[in-house]
Structure formats: C-alpha cells, structure tokens
Amino acid sequence: MDVSTIPLNRLYGDLAHLWPLVSPPSDYADEAPNWSQVLRERLGPGRHTLLELGCGGGHLLFHLTADFEATAVDISPEMLKNSMRLNPSVDHHLGDMRTVRLGRTFRAVIIHDAVDYMLTESDLRAAFATAAAHLEQGGVLIVTPDDFRETFRDCRVSSETHSQGTWDLTLIQFDHDPDPSDTMTETLMAFLVRDGGRLTLELDRHILGLFPTATWLSLMDEAGFDVERRRCPWRETEFVMLVGTRRAA
Image (cartoon, rainbow, N blue to C red; front, side, top):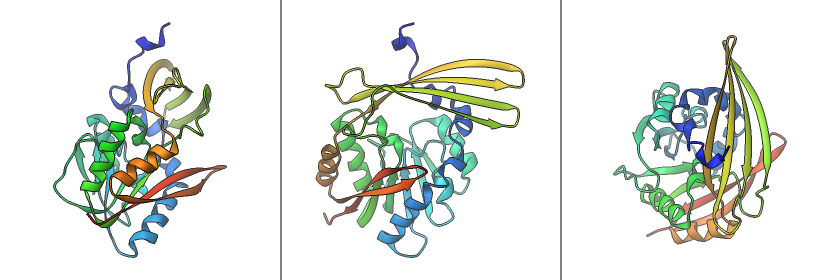
C-alpha cells in the first residue's frame, strides 16, 4: 500500500470523535501545572485573559480554565465541538492560527503541539504575528513544539491503549522524515477501535513541520518577543517551552 494514498488529518475530521480516547484530558494533568507556573511567574496573581491558538479538543485548556479567563481558536469544526463540550465556559472561535484576528488582546497566548502543523518558516512567521497581534505589551506567548530538528528521532514507533465504557482504542504511531532536506516530517497512525465485540481499523496521516531551535528563536524575536527556553519535567522525560514576552512596539 502506498502510504501517500492515506487521507490526511482524519483525526481532526471524521475521526475527531476518537480524540477523547486518543489523548484523554487526564493525560495533561502532569503537564498543565508547568504552563500555570510559567504564566503565574510572568503575569502575577489574578484571573488573567488567555487565548489558545490551535486548542484541538481543549484537553490542556480543561486544566487552565479554573484560573484563567480563556478564549480558544481551532481550524477544525469537529475538534472545536469536542472542546466546547469539555469547556463550556470558554469562548470558542473557528479560525486558522496564521490568519485569525479576533479584534481584542489578551494577557497570554498559548500554542501547544498544534504549532507542529506549521510546515514552513512563512507559516511559523504568520502564527507568531497572530500571537503578537493578540497580546498586550508585556504579554506572554508560550509555544511547545513536539520536536526540534536537533532532537527529532527518525523512524520512531509508539503505541498506547485507552478505554472508556465499552470502547477500547489502541493507537500505533510511526514518525519519520522522508526528506531531511526540507522542513516536514510524516506521521502515520493506525487506530484499532473495539466497540463491544466489533473491531475496526482506521488509518490516518499527518504532515508536520520540523525546524532547528535557532529558527524558532529567530522568528519569535522577529515577531517582537524576548524569548526564554524553559525545560519542564513531564513524566519520565521533559519538554521544552519557548516563552516569549511581547516587547513594546
């Protein structure tokens, strides 16, 4: 089978109903305190306004809404529906993080791993411009790409199983870099879904961006941010936050 014939981004379309099983809100419970800590350090006490670009199913946001007044944007109508069910108090908007303009500013903008779908430097530049356009002077941008060019591991295989009610879902994921000379990688996903006694197999494919750390830092600086790299513990490993403070125009 030619993998290029597998449709793209089904997880954000006709398979979006699987998202609560693929990546349950509980999976973010260990990660979310790192976000809260950095936001509190930069913004101080109070219920600050926060915008998430690329909120997906809203599972990270679920852990932040008690402390922040949140607004969310995503390009997928199906994923927005998931987030709206989980986070009914959040103001949701359909939009592309590269172009959306809400006509207001916030104290903080966060972009979780949805930033991985920025495939070119132009895409990244546009996403950072969107963040800057929605931030007050001195506001904070936090970005957490899954991989940097220096840390990406080719031909990476992972699997996990989650259950909910009569449903069991096993995800087998393969990440690879078909062309190291460009800024894109490919992720193949196989979903084994068992509902009662019925087992189905669904295939999905995602094209993701991959950039050197220096590119991230340079483009955030170009967009008007003073940037700090922050290493945060997560389970048995760690992840890197890029924390930007909006400079005066």
